[in-house]
Length: 127
Image (cartoon, one colour):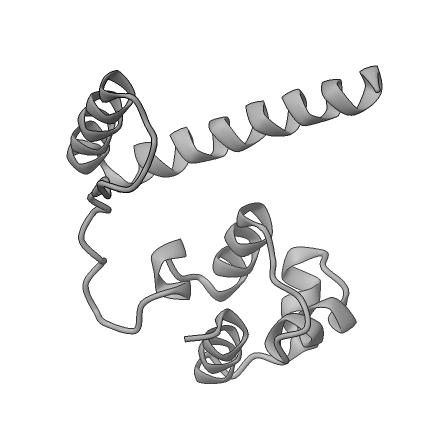
């Protein structure tokens, strides 16, 4: 499923125009149109804004059912070159993430994105 199609369907179900979404999110109407038509893929922060504007939980942007999706379980493939220690860490991390509340997982994801963005900016500035 393409995120733009899902966004349009949710917006039309709520009987909202792209202008309504623009007013609620601060995103330009032309940007919303580009997302709906598949020309642009929004980042997670933008998806959170769009979900907030549509008054739906973030998972609804990816899943049509009435229940939230099951937590992600990471599986390691044999052809990957991660060390055994890294593999054990990833499996343990996926178990802990599965036990977390939805809101806490979103908060952790947001924090990780902010940290990754800051690290990226620091590396660009040094170059």
